[in-house]
Image (cartoon, rainbow, N blue to C red; front, top):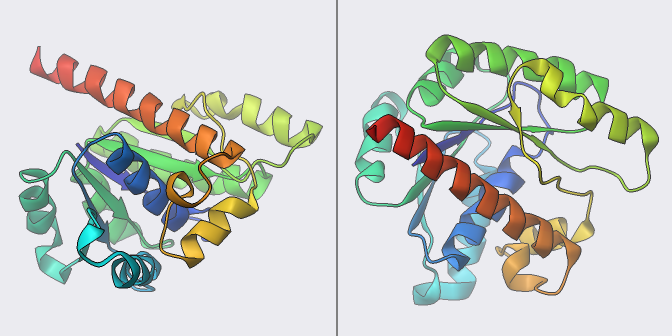
Length: 216
């Protein structure tokens, strides 16, 4: 399963979602590769910190996108791993099209703000044109905010599937990233871990259903 995490607006939490989901899938005994297609290389920096600390105990396989060879690179990784998670740059429509076209599933992290919701529409349009299914993930949702709840509850009006699980605005996600970890590893008994585990399981269920439909 190739999962591309895309959002035209910067600061939506793509890299954090990519890293956290990769660790979550590892914890569920899946083989995982991450691919950093963002020139800022934030995911690669996280992966470097992770490998420096874990060494041979690091079960995550990380790669940097290889320019014009990226699409072929993605399919080579797909042959070797259960999940390939791709982090994409913002504001790069041409590159986004290639990375979305290569995917089996698109995850679009969206913060509960009008600006994020408006920006999401551009990514959804590309995914629709490429006929790739989308799941919108409500990200950095603040607690006890009626406005945020209203925005999240109306995300399905964008015309794509919305994850049932919401990711809260939690410091645990930031702290784990600084140490090259996922919250499942560094904050095991936390709401962040509960949310992330539930989201990973939801994605696995949906991707399995997608695979079965395609096989049929």
